[in-house]
Length: 284
Image (cartoon, rainbow, N blue to C red; front, side, top):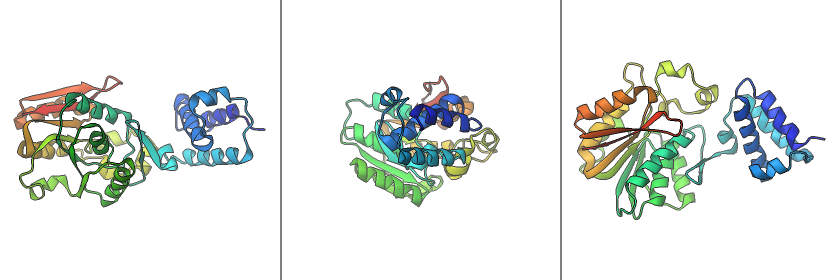
């Protein structure tokens, strides 16, 4: 007989070379909820419950896939973000809690405002664009990405979550050819910002299963996308508009200095829940 407690212990033991004990326990809870429907509180009340053979087999299959390094979000095909579930696959980054804080910052800054024009650059799953469109009143949101495969996922998410967004497939490094004279009240981006040096310290499930074009920048040009997107903002930010970035914690001050050098009058850095520099807000 296999109890829920036994399953949890096996996850912690067999994933020990990949994840620490707390992460492995969390993965077991996510897996059990996906298979049984029990939330974490219910699981803690069912630790001595004997599981059906079908449940045990399904959880063991998930455990073996996790041991191979595949992220739980890719196993399930979805990831939570800002109180919603987003479809994810190998073509998109997995939405992360730190990015929720970027969304929260924007919504707090623009509470009560109507008819804002928004553009999300490098949209991936569409998590930022969709969350903003859901919570801003009568916003008009554009979301762009260089990957047509990622945009297919983002469109699916937008349709399922009931929002209308103008998705465009383009390379933001060539923005001057595509946007004409349009202006935006909010320009937001979580662009590639991880250097090749930092890659060596990254978890293998990220390196093997998430798209490198959405993660990494050349070692010699770590602020490449911030540079180009800042230029885009200088041409397309509406009066009183705001530019928001998720940033590399190790290059926060350099990113701020770049914004000020470009001509923005303010550039403010915000720490995330882990007290790490993670967001930047700039205005003209």
